[in-house]
Image (cartoon, rainbow, N blue to C red; front, side, top):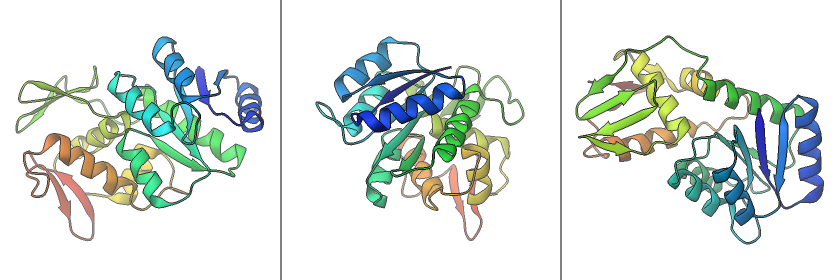
Length: 227
């Protein structure tokens, strides 16, 4: 497994490389956003660890450019900023997880492995070749989503969340269960994480995100997907 670390702090980058290589990963380092973006789009990368505060191009712009270029590798956002607004923005741009410095190495490695498991699609029962609801067509095998025949660009975690809802076949699912299934752990995950991703799914898939027809809120429970 190849991991790209985009981090300008040499000590942090060295520590990440050492810890990840001890776990058997191949690790490359980029010390600025421009170099990191170039490597992420040109190389075969399985996961990206991305600092937000970078020289030349900040992590927000890198993340937006990655997803715009069709890079689907999971992105673990790494930053010293702990304010929720930064987490919300990172998730909205296509980030898959978020760790605030200072962090524990064991926790970070656990999150890396969880993201890689999700990327390999090892959880959950198989779905039919194509799932449809309203104007939406979902192909789980190719991880593509079309709305009225037009391709919709979903971040990897948004797609995983959509799959979790589809698997319920219209049944309600709690936020806690979605966090456990999609993010594969509970400790340290923001309570609003699911809500942020649901809002993005509605924006991309619903005709009127403010009054969703398909991705419905179930009061005091969580969410369900109506066909």
